[in-house]
Amino acid sequence: MHIDRVTLHHLRMPLVAPFETSFGRITDRECILIEVAADGLIGWGECVADRDPGYAYETAGTAWHILRDFLVPAILGQDVAGPADFQARVAPVRGHPMAKAGLEMAIWDILGKQNGKSLYELLGGVGSRVAVGVSVGLQPSPDALVKVVERYLAQGYGRIKIKIKPGRDIGDAQAVRRARPDVRLQVDANSAYTLETAPALRPLDDLGLLLIEQPLAEDDLWDHRLLQAEFRTPICLDESILSARHARQALEMAACRVINIKAGRVGGLSEAVAIHDLCRAAGIPVWCGGMLETGVGRASNLALASLPGFTLPGDISATERYYAYDITSERFALNPDSTIDVPTGPGLGVTVDRRALAQFTLASLEIRE
Ligand code: SMG
Ligand code: MG
Image (cartoon, rainbow, N blue to C red; front, side, top):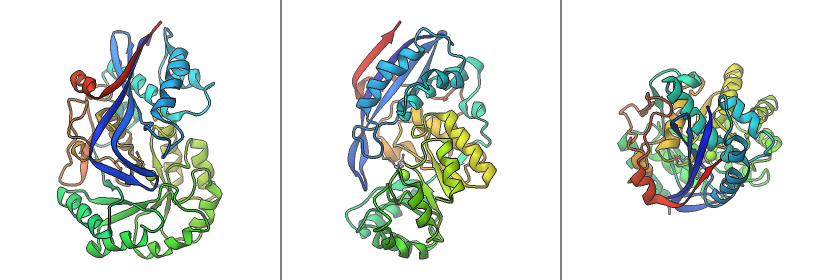
């Protein structure tokens, strides 16, 4: 495909409710939507870097810089054969996986549109629906948390994830467990503990959790290994896994028993599939993480989560859990069995609504040859 033009759109979208994690509370989601024009087609990608460097070091600002000054110039006016060729061209840029993943997504979208194939087919997905859950942010109190969880269960979510942080961990998880002894429950600490403070989490081991996500620092595979040896509950790594190489090392040293895969965190869908393949061969369950995506990123997540090794429910909830208005014409709805349908149209299978896009755009930049 000949890359004629790339347009960056910096968006700020109001969330239906604030989302609080151990690293902060947000009421709006920022992201960069990337529009690529090639061979008379338009492809869309979403860069999930947020406004602040809380979850990852990348921000919408750093991604804008890296895209404008390095990644887009590496492909503009060039014939890019596909995602693998794209990755080879941007390999000299160290790091910045979310910026790379956003641009790669647009290339996958064009590839699908050119070949009349949907993304899930290109990736090797199976099944037309994927199992999903909901990620519930920190609430003012355990009672308030239980109320929010009950509301999501009533909507049909079959798996609940709660955010935890020091002082808001055991009590919160026990409250949900007491209210719902059988619900599929997991917790996510977003790196809020150290090997010294993590023993406070010991009582979680008696709550029948599916997993404990990212208790320790993102660069701390070894301490996760030490912690996993102390827990019966599987530890799941999120922030720590930035590549298939990290995933292999984590499995070799038994630093976790489950991996959360996010294409943005690992530099793109190609690397996400590589991690999936590695884990599947090793018998390690994976699931698709979420970054409060717009309809564009959600379509990509659904396609990825349709691969056969995604045996645990993903953090992919219905559109209405995030946004009253989204930028795609399609909205994603929850089926009664806690699944969401995988888009079947060519490429991502979604249409960007230009009017909605304009409404949420803080800045845009068209880059031509
Ligand atoms: O997309 O439903 C979603 C959010 C899922 O909890 C979620 N994501 O660490 O897994 C995680 C967090 C990171 C998002 S913070 C913007
Ligand atoms: Mg996480």
